[in-house]
Image (cartoon, rainbow, N blue to C red; front, side, top):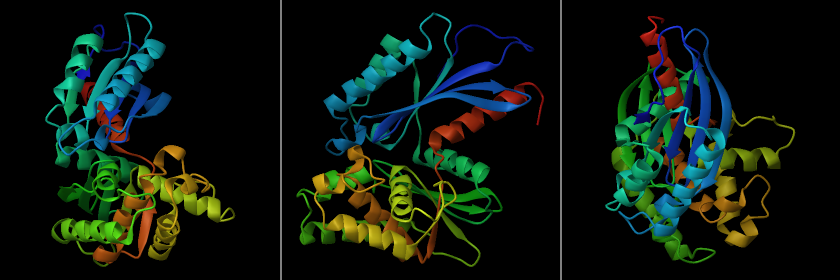
Length: 323
């Protein structure tokens, strides 16, 4: 999971940590300074689209592997040009976890960059997302839905603790590649995707209970929030903590459904790289809300990498005997 450069004794300078998150849609980098007595300070963040989850089921596409390797090499060449670089914590999520050919990515990272990647289980992936949500939002009961490129993680939270988790293969990249072959998609394709989403959610999604909130994480959720805010400029400035109603998500999905990928690129708040996958992602989020009986979605802009950073910070504090 990590690579340590040099030995540090107690009382040494702050721990410099680089987190590498090999996601299904993009690779994300986070460089932070951890101080046992005062938490962490983020020094740099980067995101590079790679589409590791965009191949045939169980396969990492060769171009995506090459894009990922180049991105990792560039990041560390820029942020650790000398021998003494940061301690590296590298994780991979659903696309890598499910891939039969994942060693085509993991082996070069090990040999060329000296990076050992931990492939997270679905449960661990979900728990890191929940940690990030709980640390940054005020809620004690609810369901956290973390939608990535290859999978959807669903976690039920009680009194700030995870009591159940589930993972279903409904990521925005994966569902787009499998079901939406035309641009714009045909009604038949949309019906097939909707049926697939509902079949998976029927077995994995907890129904809403009194006092629960639905918290959404991931690129699709952040994009839906951006589109909503750009269409309602006087509402608020920041996405984090924004509450989207079920009708808000449905309205965005209906707007996307009628457009081609090229036409979607003109929507304010939608990045070009997500124009082809945002519809499938919006359909998944909409059905989570409808099928589970959740009228509102609380947007969380944090993610798995933030949960990993919090975990590393906690580990450092514990090593120093702090709580």
